[in-house]
Image (cartoon, rainbow, N blue to C red; front, side, top):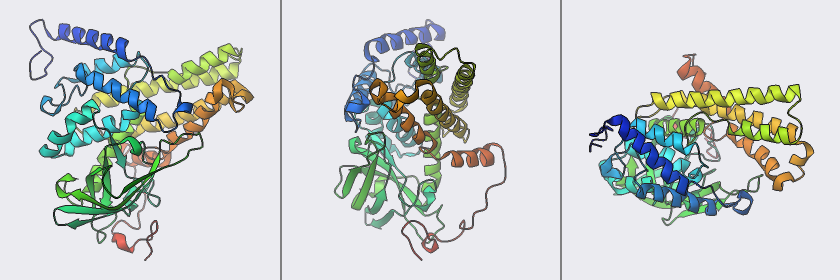
Length: 412
């Protein structure tokens, strides 16, 4: 292969891709053997995270991580075809990067596209190899779906920013080394302006992380309090007061990551699981259940095809478009179908602890799909306005200075 990553060699590009597929298959056969810890025994996902990090570090050592990222920043400088092959091969094995979806699928591409040369040189290779893991801190108690109403403040003090405020629902903040954070830097501007983006050290003085206890027994989400946290001025990402544009880009990456998954090819994992459950319980002969299973199977296939198209349309290193909301919304609808149908098939055993309570926990967990990464209602607005071209909803606070708004704990 040439150094420019074109995928060509003396034997030709096709032979090179075939050889690359063999490399992927061999590596995955040895390393993608499944997460060995049960979720019930790992409420903070710390043990799971250790195994995910070990897998990613092994992939980096084998030259199979950061395939399309530049070589000078720890990537492999390869092509979209190589990335597609990797996704296809990983789809044949248990998912081994579950806890890295935010770090790899959101923070890494944001740093690659919007970070300075110095920021990329300092952090990108470690992000690719999972020697560092990052989290995202957007949501606040008074700014969930309306992220632009955030109140966290960043005030310039010489060569540093001093940040104060609270974030909530921060996934795996307790195992993260750094975070991408948005904070308000000019309250005199309207709420969608006057926001800036920063890289924050999660071990810095003034950072406090508190677990959120979930209904399914997990504690992978957190509240994070920042009290007089000092951030070097060169850890600002993008231009001052342009953080909303960057936050929107990061949310696009998030929706694509959620809607297309971390593997490739056509997937129908949930349908397969329910088909097995229905067969084992002699429910597969029911015409109603058969129809529901087929509906869900078709929906999963369509979501996979949609995800494949979204990834194919997205140029390497460029922010995805609003079409990512289609896959994200489809995934939330499939999760709801799975919840209802699984409880129908399994029956009372689902809430009585059958299979170590896995069915009941699965049902509870599906509710998050309609919230994480933006609620279903937000996705429908995005699809209507930015994909279908429908008129925007009225916004009475569009041009008002943020300090004049009644939002969160802020009172005029």
